[in-house]
Image (cartoon, rainbow, N blue to C red; front, side):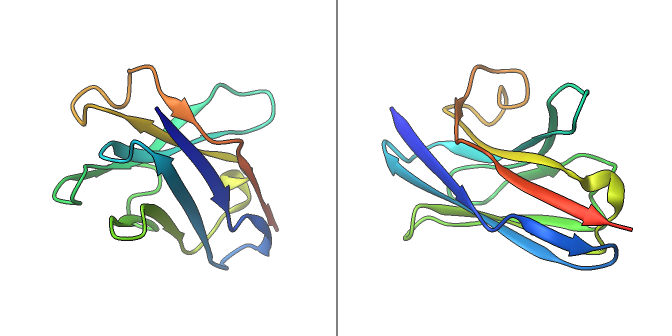
Length: 120
């Protein structure tokens, strides 16, 4: 069992940057990552990073602007978001899964979510 707590969301102008953090507690040797859900839309995958950080994957729509990383000594995963656009506005959820290969479609442990709002 893993517990996840996100932080770092907020309001930013288009072109700005934010860094989201997700602190894990409990059982932490998991693949971790981020999903987001915009109003009226389904939750979508953003990025994932394997335990130890050797493997990462990022959805095409943000891969040139977002970067995922983790500090396993702190049990924390980060999402650095640059060149933000209004369409990035969403609630961002931290997620954990035992398997990197199954991360995108698996059943996850979830954080409570953090709101990111990008104004034009």
